[in-house]
View (tube, one colour):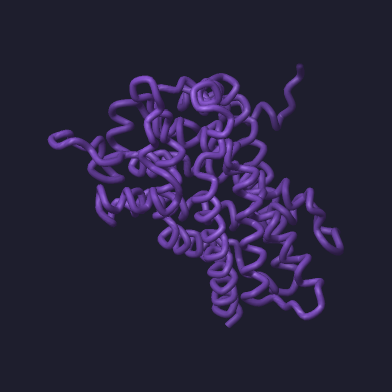
Length: 356
């Protein structure tokens, strides 16, 4: 097959990618590699288009830097408020069936409030905020990029001559693109966060694997290699691209629909309803890949995504893919409400600064 000048230019990038991450299954390498290159190409073109429109049109929107800063701040604030629910969700997802004698032992963690109570009682209240430092690292990168890039990428997909409401399909496509690209960059922070959250109460004299987030990064690189920081990238890209599409596209669509109803305005009530809708759709669609992602990151015995999926299905049954659904919805629903409410206000604040 004859290579074009554009594809030849991308060949060294492909070789570098495969050298950096040789541990991935080949299907994950190929899919993630092609997705990342295509997303980067789209991102560059969409940012160029948005800059050109900003230069030649009236200044009605904030800059990409302003959107990134607003998104990162809103995502970090939501993370701080809801990480106890996220810790409970991770523990429930990593919990496996324990067999005691001839019967099945009762699970250690039961339900959202039960899990939160057990963690607080056995490990202290501070254990509920395990992983907050890498969690904030993640939100600065992932939250800032996936939300900050959404509008320019959406504008690129619809084209500069588009008039009227943006089709739902274009919103979904833009959110899939930004979610996948953002988590590819932020995967190491997600891995460290899950590993810190997955450690429960240890027997006396048994040291913890990691003393903190920075120690976790260095220990993983030293013991497992730099490629291990991207463990679980395949399901993580799938999970975050899907959830990002469910969150951003549904929030965009629900908000657009609500604003067409007489009496509704672009205010806190509209943002609250749209945020709840975004959280519900995200959990319903993304829960199975979220479980696989958490198990792969929390347990290094799985060979790849397919191995984790098959073993989970065989050992724990199909309902295991919706383990932690209630805390996941409690977490994502509240997270989306807090994040979108904060984001809307932060963007208005930044817009006032940039226009002054």
